[in-house]
Amino acid sequence: MARVTRFAPSPTGPLHLGHAYAALVAAERGDRFLLRIEDIDTARSKPEWEAAILDDLAWLGLRWETPVMRQSDRLPAYRAALDRLTGLGLTYACTCTRGDIRAALSAPQEGATVMGPDGPVYPGTCRSKGHASGAVRLDMAAAMRRLGTVTFTDSGTSPGPHSFDGPTLCREVGDIVLARKDIGTSYHLAVVVDDAAQGITEVTRGEDLFEATAIHVVLQRLLDLPTPAYHHHRLIRDEAGKRLAKRDDARALANYRAEGLSPQDIRQMIGL
Ligand code: GLU
Ligand code: ZN
Image 1 (cartoon, rainbow, N blue to C red):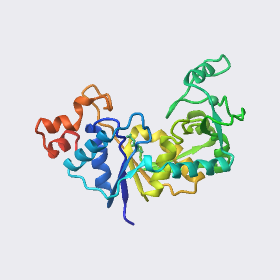
Image 2: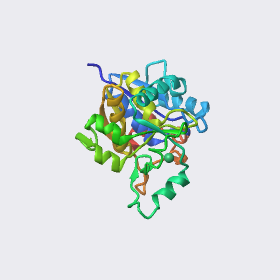
Image 3: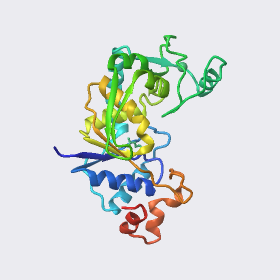
Image 4: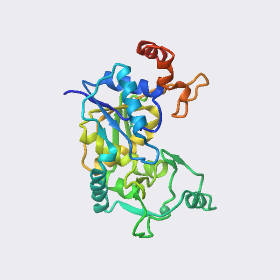
């Protein structure tokens, strides 16, 4: 079977060395290599960044299939997936602000706050409130009663099969947001719907997203979508050992290009 991989940048800043590594790993591991522009965060995404990203990727020597998928074109598909989860009785509307969540978590009867993939694990305040609108959350306990356990395999930095049961996911992940009120979806829902639509057989991405993968497998199972293989790779770090972030503009590929470095130099810098 042809291996289909993808690189899924958000056009919210320049590509830096960490993105170059992620893109090169994905391209190398795929017989077919696809691109997806993750631009659902319309406030932060800019067409200029998208153009710059494509230009940097081509300069690195990468070629990808067209047309490129753009998440801002896919809102109806996310809506349909969300409606399906709601039809299964697995969602509820949440009207909490970040401040409400902080306050609920600091109440005396709450134990220590657990940090999940999206920040502090939501305490479930709105689960039984029956709000008519708001952000839409997944009722993780109900979802896992349906599924039992979920499993994925990683061929990257944590090799092997990884299984998660309901109590673990309720404690460590909780009722994640499926759809923000403003954009009607979330990273988790969009990525699951799109990886299936693009026929991705192996998701390659940084090990910082390892915890999010458990969420994605839950959503795949609930939506009857295939679970791809996963390859979580190491992160590129700066001299101090800190992972590179979008704000590390000094390590933007564009700067190295301007200094006259070659794609081969870049590969060497990131250990390829
Ligand atoms: N858009 C995500 C990022 O820029 C990619 C996440 C993924 O590969 O699933 O980090
Ligand atoms: Zn709430």
